[in-house]
Image (cartoon, rainbow, N blue to C red; front, top):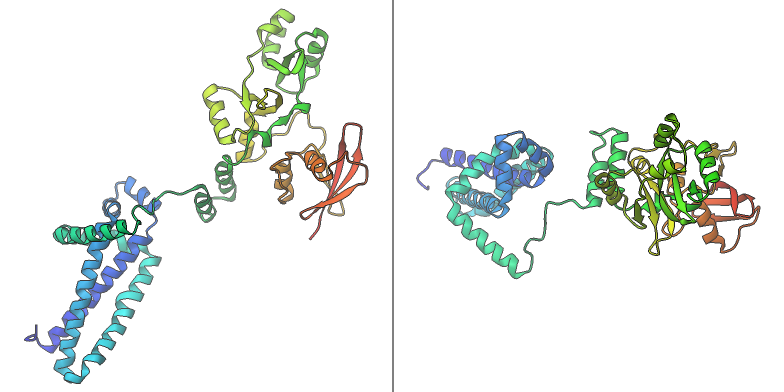
Length: 415
């Protein structure tokens, strides 16, 4: 090495600095790669992506190979810089040469290439993979030894398998939020709603028991009267007690027997479909799957004692994902009406989740599921006309009451 001229030593030093920059950029780019983007490229038979994916599966060998190469070229560069300094300036220049080389490596072989690689990981990692793969194969025994020692140290410290390439729900949510440049706002909201299905229970979206339209199988007059004026596609049928649901009647079946002029109680009983019961507290994600496997569109929500709590329809779960796309056939007035002063007149039967979504507020719904329930929870007594109270950033004023409870509520946002 000492026999080389100053020119060739300088050329060799320059090459070693470039090699150091290559290893530094390769390490950063491999760690900064988007793994899901890499999987996509690999599935499209991109050979470079497949090679990178294979290297990343054995991360110990990859890091060992990169660090082996980087440290070797840096140490060799330091030795050559020392020789150059001795040849040009003599004995007293070694420290100056070391400081100068440190600065050069820091700028040109560390900071600059790593910054570029962090911003453009694919441009570095994919083409660099073939050389890294070759080096790992050539020095495999040495890299294996380095990897073995490193694993032993990590195992001794209890740090084995500390990280896995799996996203939890919150991380997945953040990934969707960060994808706004790729996804439209509507698709983004749909994906976020799907992620949140696990958090929402059937109790949160069910039609409450007192709003269900039903008829007693033992009361023929009432049953036929309900069939004449019902505005829904299905009618619940109970036997004696409203908690004893025995099935549902689809209006399509009623029309079919009516068209054949065969409508009578015997025929009505034939078209009653067996009820499908859902335990309260079931997450919407599970219930959607159950509807699919059971080939159902409607379920009766019951508590642990078998008491009917309400009804869940498949359409309501789908609206939790895509947003409201239909309006209830029996709906005669809007649940929320904005006033000229900026306040809202609200039907207290509205669910708190729907109220939160429409008014962009965050009222709690862990216990009470409807605005009416929240009012009773807050007041701890039967509500009176013109009573008002504050919850979070809302002033809730009771406008109308009757013997059964609250009929109309006024809500005002305050800062």
